[in-house]
Length: 243
Length: 257
Image 1 (tube, rainbow over the protein chains, first blue to last red):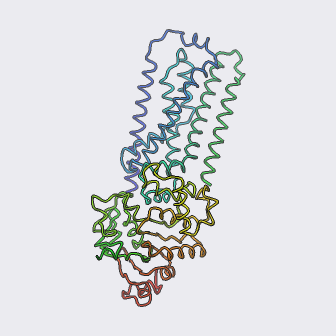
Image 2: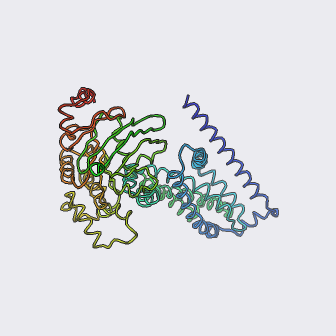
Image 3: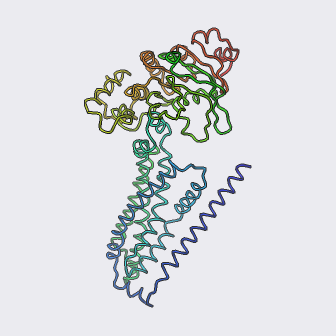
């Protein structure tokens, strides 16, 4: 009986999360496509654009945003795991958002990114970057940080508490150093996803600008290789922590 | 005057985890400077009782406590009691060695740094403190060249001794031990038991153990608990040889448990 009630309430939390996310994305879409633009502007803009300028304009601008998103994610994960009681509705709602967003395939975000960055490349916009950071980086990093925090042995926490440590002290001295490899692994996974999407943007942008659609730009190869390396590094950290 | 003889006193202590009552009207007096062991079958409330004495239980939500606990004559639930001070006075060693994932040196100083003003300890002082603490637990000779080693890489026996050593700089009055030898081999167990015998007198030890031979060997007094109730509390030899309560007799004569 309890399990049934639990499942129903879990389902309700999931539905609430999906509906609100859909509303947010709809509003965002309307907002982003609402601005006046001249017919044919997009193609003319792309004509003067090239791959390297795209990377210059977006990738470098994204670095501070990504760093901020990464740090913010760690703070959110800490708040969820250390302060918010897991049985509260607030925890469950936030948890659902994060789970749903983390499970969305990167390709979906990639389509968003291509739309905003390649086809709206007239000027550098901050909000798509922020949206990518929030949707792509934060859920993955929050999830991995949560798992990392949960992986810290309860006996270590108890040891610190029994010696008189406060919660903040315990987190700073015990939880974060222990969880650090898994947190880094999560950040690497997020970086890998971002690099893959940037590679996608570069390739599509190149197809639009170049007459030969079969050539893949060097920068895309570098980005894909970096994504694979980041992925492997993340797996190694994960494996090392587990073993 | 009575409180000088007893480091820990409880009066009608009851504890609930949600709806489940884990301790039922426990009244006990733990003598100062002696080793008292808590024995009983699994789930009888030994560890719960132990954890009440430094209020570690409160970390888990859904815990309700009733009754009185006095440590060195002071009710630990009084408004003016500082949790930090309480945990300084009442040290705890856990079932599994749980050194912090930092160096041996910093492990020994961890508690002291929490209770000392920032940067109030000089390097010379800390060196002395670490040497004294490790010498007290017979670890100095083994670890004097490994002070910067990560404590989690030590042998289990060394880790458990280190867990005791890190309490000593805080000068606790009472040391609670929750099955401290359960993760150790015979040699490690012997080493920890010897250490307890040496330190008893200076500190009051309360030890939870499933090992009745260990309770017999190390403790001066013994408490038998069953289903959250304190059944019998006597001198160890008397409790094992001439138990007064039939339940105690059943347990110490290994008819169950």
